[in-house]
Image (cartoon, rainbow, N blue to C red):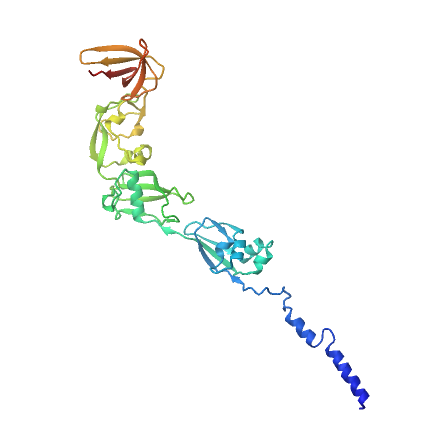
Length: 354
């Protein structure tokens, strides 16, 4: 081989090595592309979502599924992706990878920064209601003292809950909304409701042995009262007994159950019996209705008494009044306005002192 031919072969070899798509060019192209054809990596590490998450809020967002340490810009973007409601206490919700990918079709950059498992199981942070909370709620409804468990009318030993009840708040606002008494089994059932967590269904607590309601003074009729008859304070007396049977069924309508205010004979005086009341029967406020004894603008009679006189004066009440209530009336003769006590239908009384 002469020198000329050798030079030609060297030139051809160099041309081949430096040609596009060959040699070093092929290696450079391989470094700048992936086997799958995916876009070049940005250099950020993918955020891997866990397969199980416990949340506290009622609404679920993609940001709730991100682990601690997620970059702030990615977390901010994920906070605007709503995933619907979280499950109720004690329940689970499963979110699949496909669901998240569908929601992020319009957010390809956000999706590219996430590593998604096949599914994510979401649970709600919750706790089980305690026996002390249940006894306190029942005691409040019965007007009891909740200073200590020993003072409660319901004991922990005879209380039964059919299934655990889970709540998410420190104070779910337990309220007794219904009371049922079974005279055959001597059981009392209290229906409770978490007023601050309305999504939780009402549930029952059963207290056995007929001892749910502590012995306390009950208002008892001294004599028979007919429907429509106006009761007086002397028609009732207080007796220490357990409020059971019919009286328990009326607790939610008494006004006493919610406020803890005790009825007295005086509080029923002047009210009209709705139905027949038998002597010795435990009575509740719902058995009577309020009756107006004087009506605003309707003429009435005022009896005024002093140490040495008694006089009757025609007046016009300026407001409605029930038995025992003090109302303002106007003297038809002098036009003066005085306050007097309602003592009967269309009758008022006022005592003058020296």
